[in-house]
Length: 281
Ligand SMILES: C[S@@+](CC[C@H](N)C(=O)[O-])C[C@H]1O[C@@H](n2cnc3c(N)ncnc32)[C@H](O)[C@@H]1O
Image (cartoon, rainbow, N blue to C red; front, side):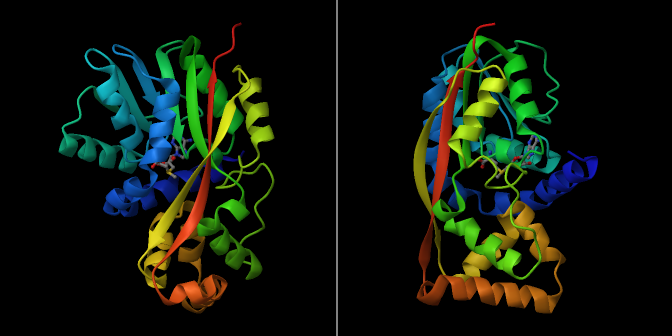
């Protein structure tokens, strides 16, 4: 892991925060079930302290708040201050109580050992330069034998919403084919790798379930705008292209969609939701 890579990932998410906040309702409408599955997996109880890592706009953690009241606490955290601010605004708008908003890097959590009862993380670990370190940090802050549930994306063929853009960028020579094990949308798409990392970090072998979803788009332009505003590192690569290069990538994405691009369409996604407990030491 290089500091430069970590800095790039940080800058990417600071830049993505406004786009995510702007389309927050749409994102949540199509993905609430993914977050709800994680919350059910940790089964929060009144009075517990639950940490959400890489919380983005905070919605999954907001589902927890009602279940740990009264006296429980949700720590909604993300390493991007812009995301944390957006989550704080959203929490206030919804009148959510019992949530603390913190800037925390999952790879170096500024929290005491054994200080939380469960951790959730939706669509976070696979983006980190060193998910093994992040999982060990997660284990460190959990009380003995306690619970972790997280969601990552499955393989490219299960996630055309992102794979189509990746393929267009790789084919045009604007990015290397995603490296096995390197950070990125698909880096934890292999359940065997998830198990290895989770067990090495001090957890029981996880249960991993498929959670399908789909992203609806009104038009090809809607999909393209969405990609530019939300698709993390992919959006940043496209942003750095010249106008002609960007137009060529856009055309190749459009071609890949074929006749779908003529109207409204939905692109499939598949999440792998993993649940485990800290193993006994
Ligand atoms: C794809 S978004 C997911 C946001 C939210 N969990 C959701 O499900 O909507 C990824 C989030 O991970 C955060 N993130 C990436 N690397 C991180 C790290 N090392 N520590 C904490 N947050 C991180 C980003 O800032 C971003 O908010």
